[in-house]
Image 1: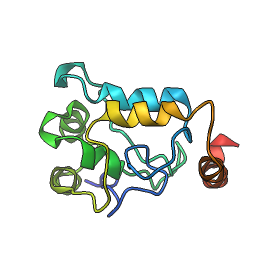
Image 2: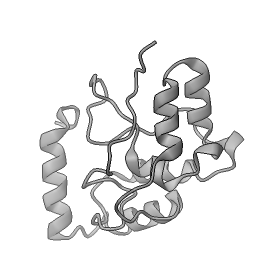
Image 3: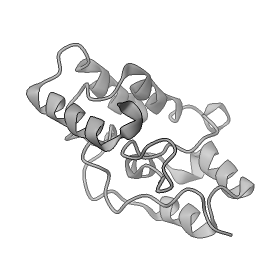
Length: 143
């Protein structure tokens, strides 16, 4: 069986909300709020895998967010457990998430990443504006 969601990239994208070096305020508030939900106790987490923001929602190249994989303990991710049981990821993809270590610094929790991102929503820096422009060119579903 082929996995419908690919494993995380070798490194989180340059606009990944989990990265410490990404400027604040480049994603919408509701995107940052999603990060917090995966910090909940396992039974209270979202059942869906957190996918890379660099891919369109309907794109065949969907992959698991490398920042999400690097930030969270895979043993405690409800979405990952459900995905393997439901056949939405194969065992190699599951293991890739379990073994993933980010080569760039990430926030230690989704809450920390969300706090950082939300802090820049009202006053994005020039660097943040530049990132927003790059994202809008990459993500056709945001046009």
